[in-house]
Length: 135
Image 1 (cartoon, rainbow, N blue to C red):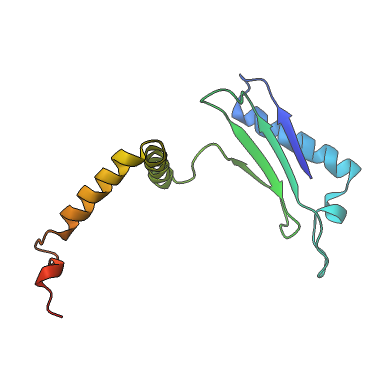
Image 2: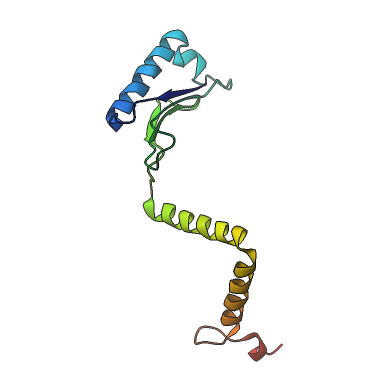
């Protein structure tokens, strides 16, 4: 079950989390979590996701997720628009930008690839050019 709650844009993140808890309690009243969203024996049950989000058009979009799958004993709340590991997020963002550039500028990207390949074929202190290898 997936529930999405659009909150006021100026709402504090803690309040967004509180709304998720309130929604969870309402769901639990109608569809008891232990019966519908908790695995018993080998019989799987449903997953529950409740999102609170603010302005979808904003660069400062915030999305908070309350997640409970049938194997979890308790629900988990996470702000999914905030990186858990900023270093990895930055690397992925850079890779994404490079891929967009290659897609939008295929000729320039191919020329850059050729230049990079030629430079890597030059011998240096850590490697040997392919022509220097006896075979």
